[in-house]
Length: 110
Image 1 (cartoon, rainbow, N blue to C red):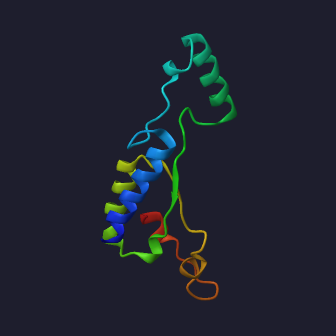
Image 2 (image 1 turned 60 degrees about the vertical axis):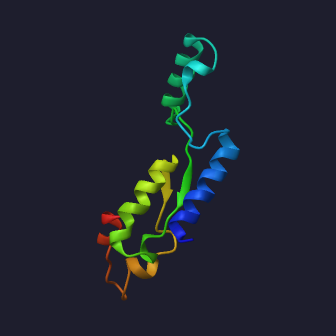
Image 3 (image 1 turned 90 degrees about the vertical axis):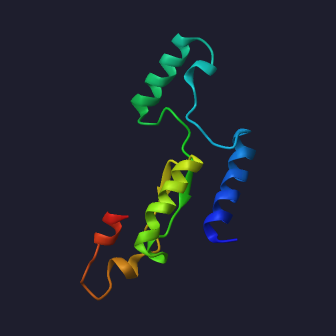
């Protein structure tokens, strides 16, 4: 089993435990009471800057994989319902390959 198949199966299993579904979709405001209550809740969340949906995230380390694989990885994360990705927290050696020389282009591409 390759890493992509494993991640896909593990992601689906984890999301199904969390949601009772094979994929996580944005929360439907109509499922939580009256439309007026939902509109007020949505307005309050928007005012606070919080999303109107669940954030389901993953850590991804593009520096570990060849660039041609990134598109496949990101597409599969999207298909699994992942809508937030944390990247770059351990990549300082790649950001600054030599003293005082910085390269952020690879992260821009990712």
